[in-house]
Figure: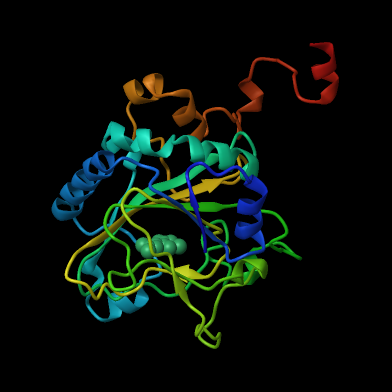
Length: 283
Ligand SMILES: O=C(O)CCC(=O)C(=O)O
Ligand SMILES: [Fe+2]
């Protein structure tokens, strides 16, 4: 895991780490603690009061009757302005614009809260390949030669080995494959980080929440970033009211996919032809 401060200059080193290095980069002390605490309070409020929500990679927790210790709060854009504030951070926009293209979007924005005793998740890869175990539903020759995902984690509590910091298997992102029980996980590391830090990892890197063996909760914001053309896992838009959609910042509009108009109802679309370099030349 490459550890940097927020005044990094070498983007190439970061992208190499994500693509062909360990797969994980952590920036230390990016966010003000007051802002993290504001987000944490809202997450805790929802997680404590809401019914158990859909979650994933939790077969073991479910089988052992401990699923209630692994909580999710979804659709964070609509749960407080602080979430728009955190996700539009300059480091995120600087790096993701290069890594996934300038019109990159957000595919999911949730919180993952592990209460003491939570058993953790099965090792997995993230969207758009998270059901890659159904290999026949994916294209021939699929590979990890370029990124179609980047995950960001913003710890709200101390993510330590003890409290269940996300585990990862360094370098596993290079070979796009869903991990199996036969794989050797002896080299597992954990994304140890503190509130205020910002973690990026390649979603092809085998990873998963670890058991929370501490006495305190371990909550983190989990963000999925995607290139503009990948269908997101979470419907982030329907949840939001008109007021939010009209008044959110340009960065949030981009993250919600408003800048990329497809799929479009071509049959009723006004006849404006602007696709192709021929039109670019004319303008
Ligand atoms: O909560 C965590 O530590 C990781 C969660 C995760 O990887 C996922 O839900 O896909
Ligand atoms: Fe994951």
